Image (cartoon, rainbow, N blue to C red; front, side, top):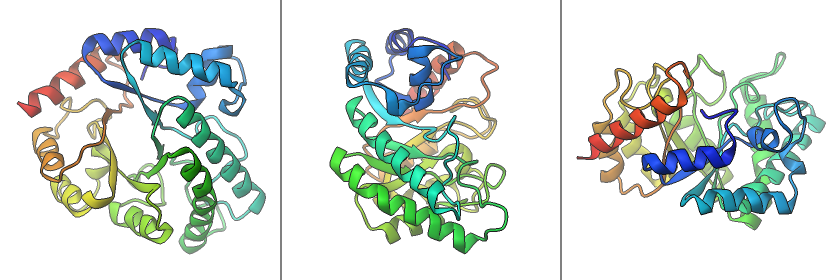
Length: 271
């Protein structure tokens, strides 16, 4: 949402609004160092620079929630590829991101990345499932080493053709059978499911580790047609104690308005 802003400016702005944490996209951290035209991979961010980034967040009075948009800006990496070398690259990259996430103080890596998980031409759903579970299983040692949780995010069919429902995501979570692989629910994506949002939250609360608040109109929570209060009530009733992160895609109102109005709507729904 704040792409192009220096991290220090982002942190101070959202803290003044009343947010408690920031969720980071790895590719923006590379830009933070070398600028828009640079090609620095998050894997190349030095230990010293990681400490600077973490200090920037913490000195503003915030926590690092974790990472999202994990595979954005990458080349030659695809979760469901039938090519072993491509999956090997995905394993290496995600394992390195687990280290980066921990170094920044984060605990959650959100796996959305719709384009990098869609079923490749010539493959079918069963082959894609086998490829994805192979990659995630091989990332588990890094997740365990760095105490980071991979949050699998179901997405609507308009974004990807793989893992489109919470039921499918939970099936994958059960198969991987690790406390370091859990579920993310997203309001925009939940709006595409056949079950109401409160019902989805109640059904899957035992594996829910992270939550994205937004609206099917691609703006912030409460900025569209979906009421926020029943969703937050359901999270509280389920005993959810993780983060609620604002995630938007339509940036036309501007980051300042999106951040301010989203937080105001979330707070109002709790009163």
